[in-house]
Image (cartoon, rainbow, N blue to C red; front, top):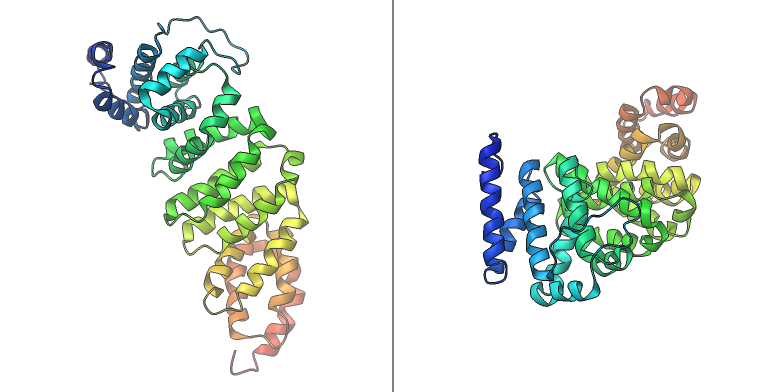
Length: 344
């Protein structure tokens, strides 16, 4: 009913939801909360909006507040909640569930639907007393929620998670980067390929939203993480890692090339990693052709030309396109010499 095209049906369904929360918020919380949480991640914006409103009702009930505080714009570092209300929510939900719920609310504050955003902001400001402190407390759970959403098959959910992560970095910057980047780096060890892809998308969002000077002190973690992702066993992860490399290059410049390309070239010499390393090179070449080619070609065209290097040249030429034209003089002599070699 919450997703029905008919407004009167939606209103009736939402009213029924409000009544359930009003009378059963404390006695049937284990039944109500999971259904509401699922609704927050629905593909239908009307269900997301109604679910956020119902979650707000539930939390207001638990916290002992009406939820009717008038909250003007401005900084959301300080909300209308009190420490006592925050403790009440933790006592009823438990800290782990409270963190999960707040992570979901924070994410949909960046929803693509204005009405969902407004509902989520109202709930957040009403139940959270201090945003920076609360975010620090829920950061591991929030990042887990965002990574899962960035790996979702729903394009809208991926967009919402990306916007939320970008807003988080833009607003709190250096206060959250020391927590966010290690979590993303560790995420590459996840056995789930979709979540590893979500990590790469998250890295792109973080680097695109942070200032260049903010990222410089984290290059020791960012570069190895993207280097590892470019050699991932899954094609989709490598593709997302290529886009992350492009964003990294804007801040790190030649450092990104010097610390990533040689590793990929060495991996191409190993039979077990050659295929993934070659594809990793293709990914970064497709996004940064002019910057990467001068670093790759000298290695590949070094005589005598091996059959693998000849194959690699062909594969890279497919993505380099017109960018290869200025390097023809370097490539052709080696190819002509190799034409006389029966092994190539």
